[in-house]
Length: 240
View 1 (cartoon, rainbow, N blue to C red):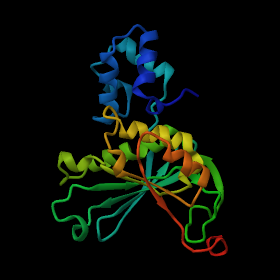
View 2 (tube, rainbow, N blue to C red):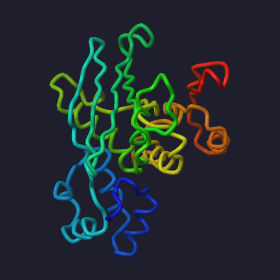
View 3 (cartoon, rainbow, N blue to C red):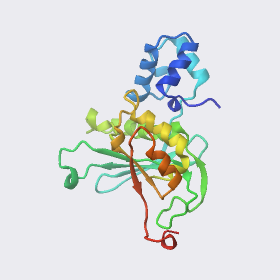
View 4 (tube, one colour):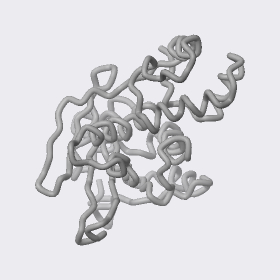
């Protein structure tokens, strides 16, 4: 299967476009379709030449998450259940700004994102591991959660353009994020990049149950993401 276009960085796309003898500005146009207009098909990208769209379609997939159910709560939190291309399911949760914490005029729009189908760690307080670990999410499946929720936001009658975009991420949905380290980091680089999601690194929090080697690795990354530790007990016996 072809890799998904949303798993590619701008630099990788520029290299590919050079092999096709396409000008650099075409990459900028493509990225605008993906991350500003949140396109769901190649046909929508009308300012790209047809021959380029055909090359893209032959080289890359453009997978879209299927919304299965959505549940809302009194505080306007929304939980989305997505079906992936292989039939597996993951969840994302949209969390509105809390006026008590951030003020009535806060523009904070937080999304809680999943990184795996299931989880191998079996923390007792978390339902993600009840059926065990199935697989890691691909880069595009992590990125697409943000785009899919932004598309949903855009359909809401009272949402203004600024309210459509996610500007705060917490990586604490289904799965252990640091057990899917490489895919997670590449997805976050796409979501942080000005040509991608444009979300500041300090507005991205990665939650972990405590994978020490990966925490050390994360600390050495040039992008300074926030880290949250889910330690629900003071001893290994309680945590287990």
